[in-house]
Length: 193
Image (cartoon, helix red, strand yellow):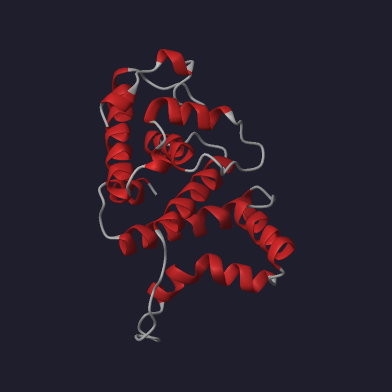
């Protein structure tokens, strides 16, 4: 997942990003269901799609996995066109980070930086149980990325990621999060991006 995030921020091939992110999303979702004996975020998303849009569970599952399944089975259906939006890749990565967190270990610095970037990108998307202050933190550090062109959004994400990596190297992270500092003590990165 870390590699998918770095490729995304570097503006690399979206199909490569989706392949890696989709695999991580699927693996983490499956592990949450099996190891935690709990509902994965994937299952909750499918249930919401059924309730809100009248889809069947299979239809919701197929929509979630459409791009990666098209790529995986391209040999069987070579004329199939793979369509996906930038937002879909961002959302698959975000949900994969949530699933990873549900497995109980701390998230990597790369995943945590991505989550902060995601909240600056999608201020109207809060998931169940998420603190609204996360949007505030993301926007205070990165600005209103939702108003920027895509290349600037990704450049901001990459610069923020590199800053987080340097910060983590100089300041070992606490076991359960990054960073355990109030937002006002963190640098204003808007001037750097």
